[in-house]
Every structure is written in C-alpha cells, then in structure tokens.
Image (tube, helix red, strand yellow):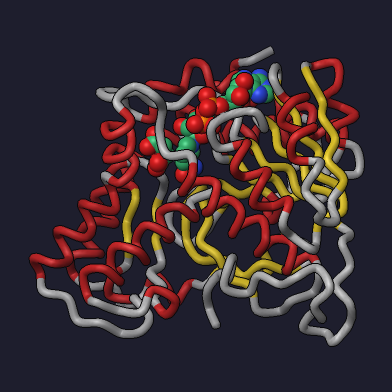
Length: 342
Ligand code: NAD
Ligand code: LMR
C-alpha cells in the first residue's frame, strides 16, 4: 500500500517480522529536544518500537527525569539521557535516525515564521553536531518554520561536506495525518483506508492537500474541497488557539513523528514498500525544496513520485502556483541565514 502504517502495522516485540524472522531491535534513534511538549510523548511512542535498540534523549534541561521514567517500560530499547552541549556529541554517536523537535512553539497571533529568529540558531547548532557525529543518519526536522529550517540544515551539512539530500527530511506527516482524519470524518469513510497526499511546504497556504488523489477515490464538491483544504492548512493554528498560549500541537505531532520514524526504520530494515510525504530537496518543481510523497529505502529517499504532481485538479493547479512565491521566500530566507553565519 502506498501509505505509512504507524500504529496499523504495530507489532509486538516477539512477533515475527515480514521476513518471517524474529524482529531485531537494532536501530539507534536520538531525539533532540526530548524533554519538550513533542519530545516526551514522541519518546514514549517510539519506546514501543521493536526496531529500536537505543533511544538517546537530549535536551538542554529536564531530560534526566524523562529518561529515568521512560526507562522503566519493559520494551527493548535502552534509554539514555544527555543534557547540554557538552553531552550532545555522545548522544549522537552511532545513531541511525536523529529527530529534531527542539525549539520554541507558536502562541496565538504568531506565524511559524515568527519563530525563525530563535529556532534557526537552534537547528543550525544541532545539525552541526549531527554532521560531526553521525553524518550518515537520517535527519528528521520538526522545528518550525520547517520551510526554512530544512534549507538551513542542508546548508550546514554542505558546509561540513557531509550533505546527503536523500537523508534530510522536513517532517510534514502531521499534515497527512490531519488530512486523512478530516476527509474520513467528512465523507464517513473508514479512517484506516484513507490516504491523502499533502505537498508543498508546512505553513499556511504552502500546505496543499491533493484531495483529488485521495485513496480510496472520493468525489468532493467544490465547496468541500475549499472547506477541507482550509481546515487542513489552518489545523496547526486551530490547536495553537485552543491551547491559548500553552503551545502548539504536541500529541498529534508526536503521533505523526512516530509514524515517520517507524517508516524510516522499516525502510532501513529493508521493507521495499515504504512511502511518506516529506519536505525534501526536490526537482519536481522549480523550487529547490518541496514536500511530496517519496519512496524510502535503506539509503534514504529511493525515488520521487513525479506522477503525483500530474493530473491535478484546476483548484490544485492554481493553489500550487499560488504557494510557490511564499515557499520560495521561506527557503531563501533559510539559505541566506545559513550562508551569512561565520
Ligand atoms: P516545547 O517548548 O514544549 O519543547 C521544545 C524543547 O526544545 C524544550 O524541551 C526545550 O528545552 C528544547 N530546546 C530548546 N533549545 C534547545 C537546544 N538548543 N537544544 C536542544 N533542545 C532545545 O515545544 P514543542 O511543542 O515540543 O515544539 C517544538 C517545535 O516543534 C516548535 O518549533 C514547533 O513549532 C514545532 N512543531 C512542528 C510541527 C510540524 O508539523 N513539523 C508540529 C508541531 C510543532
Ligand atoms: C502544526 O502544524 O501544528 C505545527 O507546525 C505547529 C504550529 O505552529 O502550528
């Protein structure tokens, strides 16, 4: 199936894998920002993965208690805590997947770009350490604004001479999770069957759900397309407003990030049928980075799916053209930031 399967394919640690072999807990995952609103539930969800042997939790504070707590769960991974810059290198050594939810979240009235000044520096510093300590790892960037932090990460890796565009991912899984949920609700479909690709970027109108490509195939009225598209684009803001100053999406984000990690680990483990949407270096449009469905394999992105951008509805074609200037500006802002740093 051309879709992620976190939760659906969840297996017990002693259950046989698709190879008919015993699943080996063999991958190391690091979470940078692990004591935060996303980091904690994300760590809990992936502590349940039978594919993970080591879970390295890093933050600038409060991570000792989180790790002590989590380590009592009787699932395979060994949980270790790392606090502050002096322990970052050790946290990253030998790691296969690095997940970065470090940084400040939005409050009501803010755009994701308003987080740029603080989060750009955080992502830059963390990715420098990734380059120095685990340059072969898959890197999952969650910190906002994703449309700029991923280009920053790419520049940092280039400056360090270790950039592999097949292994750098902006996490947009939450947009897909939301689209699937909202479409299933609206059309009364079984949730487990619904899959909506979401392309573009991860902010406002740059988030473009391709409702015309929904699986199973569904008919939407023009009004439904408009309503659903806007709801998906504003879903982050919906949560920010509901939390009223206490942050942005954390639980649904942790769920989405866990799905993307699980997909990455399955790909690393040789599963040849893993597809996820992600914001990546891309030649599908004239923009250097773009979110679309990618096929994941042992070495990262194995293939782009150009056919996903063909046969779009008129509404989607227009929305795609309309999002490009904003997405381009956010990408360029990230690149310029990384290039002007000493
Ligand atoms: P939070 O404030 O609850 O947690 C952030 C954590 O990062 C804190 O524990 C903090 O100590 C840590 N941190 C700060 N500076 C750090 C550094 N230099 N190194 C390591 N850790 C550091 O915030 P949150 O709700 O977990 O959100 C984190 C980020 O994720 C925000 O930027 C938010 O906008 C973003 N986000 C992205 C998506 C997405 O779909 N990609 C969804 C939700 C949130
Ligand atoms: C989201 O989509 O929930 C995140 O990007 C957080 C935010 O600021 O909306």
